[in-house]
Amino acid sequence: MSIKIYNTLSRKKEVFKPIVENKVKMYVCGPTVYNYIHIGNARPAIAFDTVRRYLEYKGYEVDYVLNFTDVDDKIIQTANESGKEVMEVANKYIEAYKEDVNALYVKQATHHPRVTESMDDIISFIKGLVEKGFAYEVDGDVYFKPRAFDGYGKLSQQSIDELRSGARIQVGEKKQDPLDFALWKQAKPNEIAWDSPWGKGRPGWHIECSAMAKRYLGETIDIHAGGQDLTFPHHENEIAQSEAGNGKTFANYWMHNGYINIDNEKMSKSLGNFVLARDILAEHDPQVVRFFMLSVHYRHPINFSNELLEGAKNSLDRIKTAYENLTHRKSLSMNLVADEQEWLAKIEQFKMAFEAEMDDDFNTANAISVLFDVTREANMYLQEKQTTTKVIDAFLGAIETILGVLGIALEQEEQLLDDEVESLIEERNEARKARNFARADEIRDLLKEKNILLEDTPQGVRWKRG
Image (cartoon, rainbow, N blue to C red; front, top):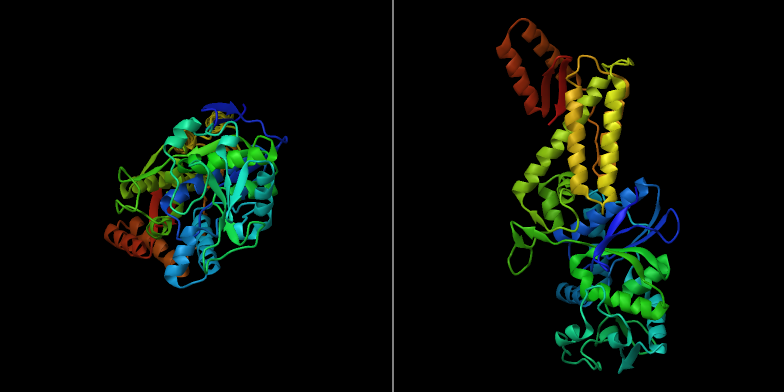
């Protein structure tokens, strides 16, 4: 079955056909690094990392580019307020971003370009737009002319006249039309700047992605992704710049993730519900946060609350417990044929169902539902008197496959207890045989204090760390 992607440009699902067979060129807009990322920034990191993982699972080689905007008005303001250099601020928050998304099990991008390391490409791109008549210079500033590009507004599906009615010329701007946007900004006194044909200055926000995408992925890419808030003006302007400059389609598929609400209200600083990702990660298992994010389709809004996170933790714990039970039972199973084919066929159907959901615009919410079905059937299978290694391996493989694509780690518990705990478990077994249940319960409580949880099963006492 072919993968279908909802393309923001066409407003419909389209069969995915990469430019080069078995290879995918994917560009995701990264953060402007003036602060720690908030939980809304974590959502695209997780969502599009999962898209990447599934494409790789399907056999594609993914060239994944995520940029860092490391020079910008907000970064300069933060630097001025803190008395630090712009690059000092940028470097700090780039490392912080990497720490946060690494905790969320996000794979490192193939390339992490930075604006400050791409200045020659950006200046060259702007020069080409000026030469082709799509941009103009005024007193050291360079502006792009959307009216010169046929099709401006096609991503956000707005007419150019509708867009113009909401556009304004800010104080100090010298552009010819309110819709025109900055490609290059003349340097202000004591502000970080680079030499250019138009004098010292720095790039506007939108041009950087067009230049970096071209450098690392070529003039036409397969997938461009980012948050819903970037659709206009950022991505609209990227399309105009890139297609005007290159004379080719910029991206074949545009993907955008939905917003995050906090306790049913849109997250914003004005409402006081602005939540940093690292604050959430300090209180909750990052694996649970990732699992929660994927429990809702990436295009839909998601409501974030501690209660919902607790529910996600319980769900993930049930899945991991089923996996642990299968692992434990495997050591007690035999290589016998006991209704194997029926169970193996059922497991194969689950894997096909998982792929069908992911093929349908990467529907992780439904894929997780399939995972619950797998674990439910696995628990039913474990009630069988006779189990076989082959079926248990198939269940384990299905769970590992789905969690692997979702980016959820299956950490194995330590297999050996220290001598003290081992002795206590043996003493508890003897106490139970002697019907000294008071002592048995006392030992259970003592082990619980040591973060060792006991489970009495027909196959004997099992333990796990709490």
